[in-house]
Length: 285
Ligand code: PDD
Image (cartoon, rainbow, N blue to C red; front, side, top):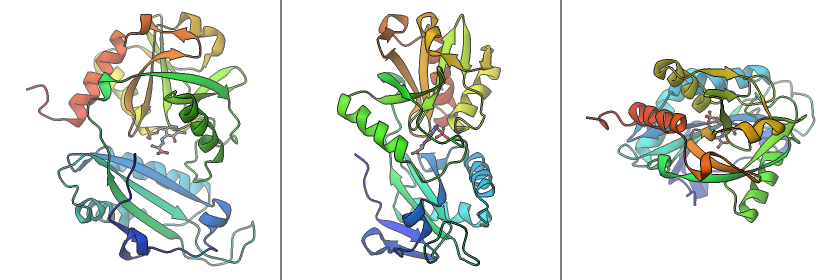
C-alpha cells in the first residue's frame, strides 16, 4: 500500500503532509485543471528525469499553463532528501494546477499555479519475477490521453474494477484496437516483432515505453509502433506492461488468452535484463 510522505512541498513551503492545505477554489480540486508527473528513483538516483520534465512541459503547453519547470530538479532532490530516501527506491510526484480562482470553466485572467511535490518509497526490485493477468475494457476516456492530466476518473473506475476482480490491470480498447492500460503502456510480441500502439493522442507517451524502444535498438529486437487488434491476440506470443513503477511486467493472460503457456517470453526477459542494467549499475559485475 502506498504511504503518505513525511513532508511535502507546496507553493514555496515544506510542510508536514497533515499541515499542507489548498484552497477549495483550487482549479485542480474543482475542475481537474492540472497536470502531473511520477518520476522513479533507484537508490536515490532519478531515472530519466529530463524526459519526465520534457513530457511535463509538453502537457503544460497543451493545456496552456505557464510554469517555469527549471525550478523542479532542485525541489525533487530536496523532496528525496527531506524524506530520508537518498539510499532508497521510490518515486517523486509533481502536480501543477492552474491555481486558485472563483469557479468558471474558462481560464481566469491572472492566477498563480499551484505546485505540489513529494517523494515516497516504492519497492522497485524483483519486477522481473512478476507475472500478471489483465483484462480488456472499452476505452471510455477522452481523445487526448497524450496529456498527463489529473482528471483520471475513467482510469480510477476501471482500476477499481481490476482491484475487485483481482487482476493487475485493465487494458483499454478503442474501435477494436488495444491502446494502453489505466496506468501502463502495453507491448505484444507477434512473429518475433515487438508491437505497441503509436504515441498519438490515444495513449500517454510513456517514459518506460521509450526506454523499451531504445533497448530494442541496442539489443537488436525488431519493433513496430503499430496498434494490435483484439482479434490478433490469438497469434501473440508474449506481452508486457511498462510504467514508471510497473517497470517491465510480464503479462501471461489477457481475458481468456494465455501467452507462451503462462511463462514469461524470451524477448520480455531480454528487455527486463536490459532495464535492470540501466537501473542497477554494477548488477552484472
Ligand atoms: N502512470 N499510460 C498511462 C495512462 C499512465 O498513467 C502511465 C503512467 C503510463 C506509463 O507512463 P510512464 O512509463 O511514463 O510511467 C502509461 C503513472 C505512473 C501514474 O499515473 O501513477
